[in-house]
Length: 443
Image 1 (tube, rainbow, N blue to C red):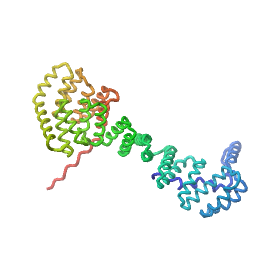
Image 2: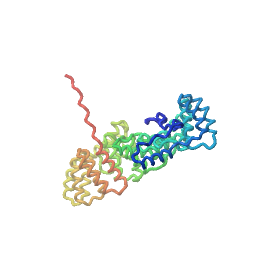
Image 3: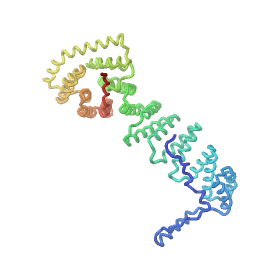
Image 4: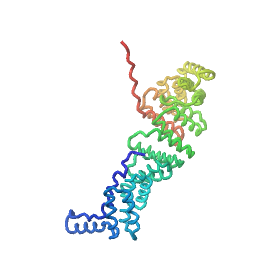
């Protein structure tokens, strides 16, 4: 746990011990008689209270401190500490000397104990409280004392108004190590939120650690929201697969919902699915939903990535999907002409799905738009998600964004379809990677 200047590098600035025999500074800078009197009264009130007995013994101790004779200073402290009725100022001087001596001698255990006393008794300057707790957290971390490490690091965070996201991450990790999972995902979430508020990209590890904490607390709703945020920043097949599995459970494997969920994951060039079962389920869902082209593309991607074995029933399923696509291509133009004449928008949307299946995204977008405009569409959320997906393939991001907004508005609030629309929105908002440079040619 590093990153901030430790308080001990500046602790002498607290300077209590050096005031033992010092006089009160002149307050002559105050303007006017009244102000001078008020300043003098304030200074007198702030003047440390030291008894004659204390001053007598403290004089020698101060010499030891000045000469950095730490062993002698420590040996002198018990006699002074035994004085009756020590004032708060005198106790603070003694505590400061003990800090100074134990640190100077490199006695880490005694130094930590001295810091504990300093904090407990309220001797610390307000702007140094957090730094002292942080140093204690580092000490106890080295001693592998998880409980005290966590306690003092939490105190550091609470006392630090300008805490950094990485420090909130550290606190979250400490809670995770102590099996306090609810607190872990809370503080990791604060690290993410603070990072976003600063215009920074949250670290991938923060989401991963939160996922573990949500799993431990069986907080499925929190876990899903965290995974959705994670995949919007760091899309990959593993994260998409976890999200799709939760959608499948929440929707009870609803065909319309799952077709949209699989489509979102597999059409993302940075996404995909992590298992054979995922790709095969997408293919089955697409075939049953009237989109054999999606089944073909799913199987081809899975095979290309080495996830789906390129053999046996998988090859058979791929050939069946290709045959269905070829059949659809022969009939789609006639179906489109019939849909143009049909007053029901639902028919146009179904033809739009057919064109999307065959990879004709221009016609898919046009037919789906017309269907939505006619009205009478059973699932406006589904239709707008289809429209948005086709527009994404065409590179028409602004229009796609409007379609996904419409899908989110049409879907049940908080439902899976609305969540899918929001993930599409995150995808179209993602910066487009610059094209790779063309390979050099010889000559």
